[in-house]
Length: 462
Image 1 (spheres, helix red, strand yellow):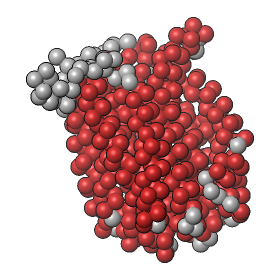
Image 2: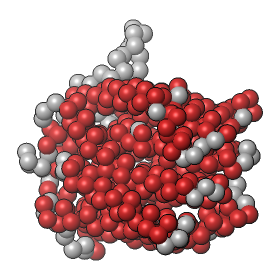
Image 3: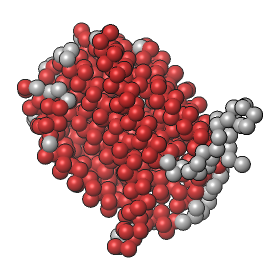
Image 4: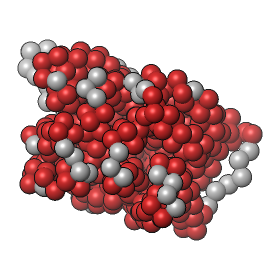
């Protein structure tokens, strides 16, 4: 057990830093797939191609979010099993989770593929740009089941504390994409089709290299049985369904933002597309926090050590603040070279400069939301994550983006999106404090003591 559940002892800040940094390298490799596509497409010098990738990216958010949601479910359950010393149960949940991930992934990809034209039109694409985006999606979407397997395999590896191999799986995928992109786009003259095929190749690579370490180093998989599948379906779905719904909120919010930005022309949409791909690469460490902190919280929750659960959450917030300040400073000093990399001019360049300026600091509140969602998923309150993400991406995004657009134009769209993250980041942190203070109990203890004094927000369960 001691070898399997490695987060039950040792420095929590060190665990958070190591898991986040290694996970972020791997996660950034996934996002680099899109980022590299955008760089090479921008080299073609056609705004319609860059805008098409932007529209396609907003829809691919849906497929990626489905994969992340399933990965969160299996990763949380495997970590809890390991924390409780039930390694056999951990193997079974891995096998059954992968089975359901492939099954549901196939169904979801068929649903998206059949509605590609309607989805592209829904987010504001028209004419040739809409046709280009639809053609790109028709190639990439059928490979969704491979992305699901890759994401879930990485989550299982992190649940075992094997951050290095989880990282390498996605690095291999990013390298494959980086090699295939110039060959297919320029060498064979396939343009967007080449970028799409390169993405498919990357997802296949991630899938294979995430599964192999599980088979070789962590007990492998067990053949799924009807009894086992039925037994593990409820716990997988109890986390998986709200986790998927939580993740789907992000592409909905991005689609709302994209549609608002579309009124300002292809230059504005291209700028948004660049920012959307730059953001997860620049803040990959923060994006990785939810996956990295999850196993740490999950193992200690499985061991019923609520003091370490609280300390892990606070360490993650401290780490988020440190990373946000550092990355924001780097982006500010490199804003001109970054804009030049994409040949950004006019409105496109203004949006890149805005993100690389003071707006990047607001990403701390997104990190606060990510860390809080990880706590909800691993402490028995996954629907809290759903409420927070949907609240941010609808209740807050719709009015704030509209207000920002009305007052400030395309720059106001980005500012409104950041403001929505600020509001719900604070709300999520407050709610996470209550959940942690009760050790995941259904009924939170009162926020105020009888004498009216405020109980410490992060008071550990006694």
